Image (tube, rainbow, N blue to C red; front, side, top):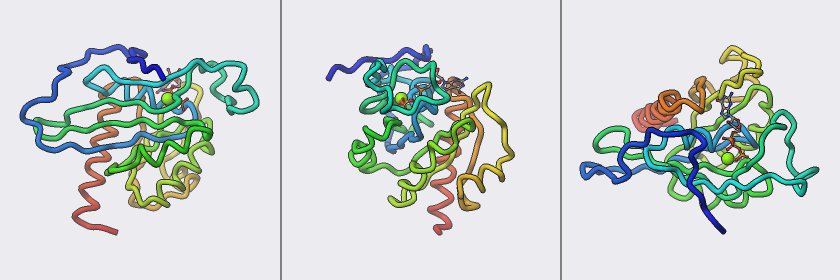
Length: 204
Ligand SMILES: Nc1nc2c(ncn2[C@@H]2O[C@H](COP(=O)(O)OP(=O)(O)OP(=O)(O)O)[C@@H](O)[C@H]2O)c(=O)[nH]1
Ligand SMILES: [Mg+2]
């Protein structure tokens, strides 16, 4: 399979080389239903040119892929996205974006190996596409935060309503973001880091 670099969200990219001061690497997985913005998030926040495995959506997917709400989408991830971000001089996050479509979910097993935590992206126009994703994370016992990706036509709900709709416990952080904006995506990752830290000091 051919892999291509994505510049869907254009740089600036900082150094491609890993800083020599980096001493800790953490694997993070970006998950969510079809078309919620996973590739966009990895692309916006990565300091290296991200790797994507997007393929053009064709007529062959009609009736197989549920494109309701994302009719304008022309490409979809078929294997994974990959990016990297240095949080500080020592800590580096390796980001793995999963495919959103059910027919590629068998790839999850490999992508989750060694992952410390996950970001679940949700789109308020189609909350239901994230239900299965959250269920699967809970089954695996992978800690996660929920990031509500704000699309212009997306309805806005109070956080507590979203918590009820997604059936999330009190301790799971829910934050809003715009996956296209580097700082916003970075804030989501920082939120996940704080959450992971809080679980180490006061585990469930
Ligand atoms: N308005 C708006 N559009 C966004 C945002 N994030 C992503 N998009 C657009 O939404 C579309 C879907 O984004 P992708 O990043 O491909 O979604 P994905 O979750 O990787 O999709 P799959 O890999 O097919 O599951 C793209 O056309 C993006 O430009 C956002 O925060 N706001
Ligand atoms: Mg994608």
